[in-house]
Length: 308
Ligand SMILES: CC(C)(C)CCc1c(C(=O)O)[nH]c(=O)[nH]c1=O
Image 1 (cartoon, rainbow, N blue to C red):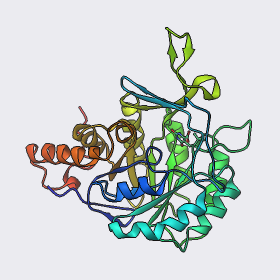
Image 2 (cartoon, protein in one colour; image 1 turned 30 degrees about the vertical axis):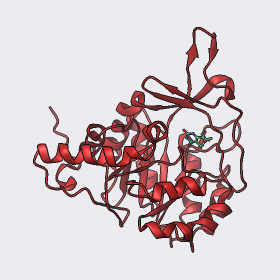
Image 3 (cartoon, protein in one colour; image 1 turned 60 degrees about the vertical axis):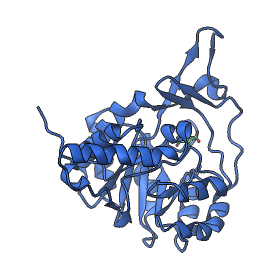
């Protein structure tokens, strides 16, 4: 069956690509993604200047996923701007993730990538904003202000990486703000923020930064990701594409996101744990599921969730 998909008017040869975050910070990692079956090359969220990130241990694999508080370690946006032309050789979409520490940082970086070889820009709205205020994606006034500022440029198609929401009023509020601006896609969801995993043997958290508080990832969060994708699919016009993210390890997980309405899916924790083999495996598993169920094309199953 055909697994190719058009997302934000860009053609993706398959439905499975890497999510921003794991194993996509260095140029070597990005070439590795280029040589893999990932349908795109997505970079680690970048900031104005290079960052070391948080002290270790800052990532902990868990039975059903992971918890991490990396602290935005990255090479700084200029390094990604510089390496992009060397990544076009893989003939797959290049997606640059941007996570400024302020709206002004985001404006400066979105502006800098307008003339670049990036095919899509994904602006991370889980980034911190004004200290003492919620993260950008949880501060609806700031979300509106940030979108107004970063969508002024208009050359490069731009999307937003959203945190998870848990309330229909929030889905509606965010969807109504997004519809005001030329946003081409959303990526939903980011890790579930500020969770705490405790090891009863050591009587300590399992990660060091932020007194152990970190983003929860993996299978634990798939039901939350499915709900966010399905809610936004119903609230947003079809012109706004949706990347589904959260707990995708298998073709079946990807198929669930397809039924929920995702145009393509991004793999993070599974890629962190299994390496680039995960992309071909998940694609093949999805292909087998579609064949078994007699779907010739992913578009026949997209959003086809059958309510009881
Ligand atoms: C959490 C922030 C550090 C503010 C942004 C970067 C980020 C991180 C990170 O770099 O710690 N981890 C995530 O799971 N999602 C993110 O968006």
